[in-house]
Length: 182
View 1 (cartoon, rainbow, N blue to C red):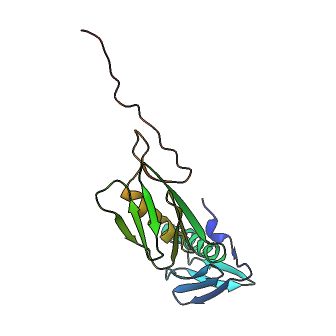
View 2 (cartoon, helix red, strand yellow):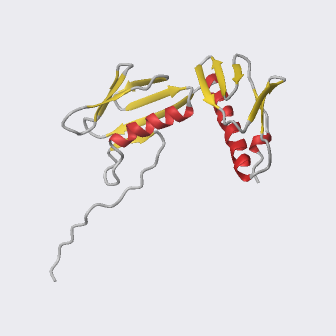
View 3 (cartoon, helix red, strand yellow):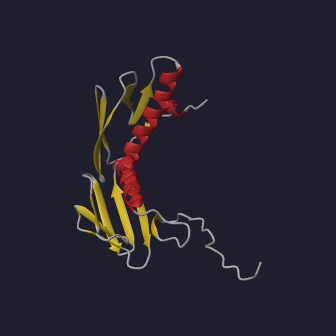
């Protein structure tokens, strides 16, 4: 049985936490964010630590207990250190450009693909072949990275497309030419 929900969350220096009824607000050096807290969970701030309590030992409340604690811990980490996802583009003539508000991808289609950058994210293209996505909301960073990758996922024969940095694509052998007579 998981006991994640029982562990208190330490609030580091430089992070401000404000708990209201049904929500938790976090401010830190990387930004600010707000999380909705389920009405069954009781969240309190004690001695510089966030404590999550559940009303009873029902299965649904146990699951919500661990989930709420994990989401709050992720928010504290996000506003303190931030989250980052890096994507690489592989292919001849494939490029990426970012002007802050939109990401433009030239990945083998007739027209460039324009993706609007969600509020709260910082997207950079340090080179034509690399995209760096930063933000304090782990879900938003991961979702936008997945949306960018979905534009042109890596294909298994030559490996062309958009992939996460460090992602290993299993390659397939192409068609084999067999010369011979029957």
